[in-house]
Image 1 (cartoon, rainbow, N blue to C red):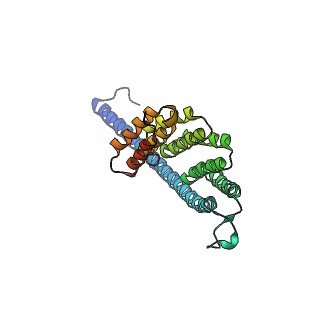
Image 2 (image 1 turned 135 degrees about the vertical axis):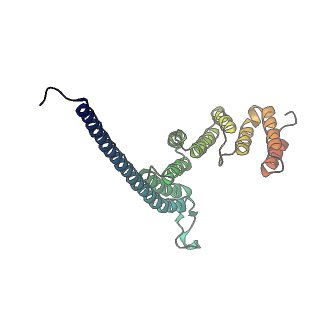
Image 3 (image 1 turned 180 degrees about the horizontal axis):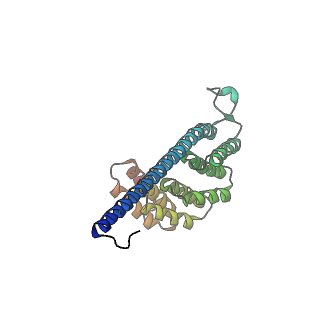
Length: 240
């Protein structure tokens, strides 16, 4: 190799080096882009596969849930008097609630990640309440109320308040209703909650009950809930 390299040769080497590095950069960039594309494809396929799985699970859950709902609304009485042969008939309410509980529990356990499975868990709690297993019902409802589905959580909280009210714990029920009144949902609406709250306060605090009835009439005039509030006011003592 010659000891002396001319400026021309040095310049040519620099150009060559720049081209080589540029080529490496292009190749590296191309490899990176390929990796990104492959990763995106894998993600898309994974999402597509997961969505397909969830959709399939939802369809399967829906069919089983329908059977559970038929049991939940089954007729009490004699099978001979059933208008529809496919309609489930039970000797008493306890038998009906027990059968529905088993069916809803299967849906909830087998399809826990679907909306149908979550709703089945809620109905299973209602069946537990029908079977007078209030403590178990409350435990299930508490779990549901802590979930990410706000509507279902509100439904669970509302039912918890109903159980507390029936169990002679009006203060616990009132606390829940007050929270729900401030943050109502679509199903558990504000007027529904306010009427329940007023009903609970009729004996312990009739003045506040009257105030709530008036509030319902003001917020929801010319509605059935306003009529219900009128009936509630009419049954309060004159001192209220």
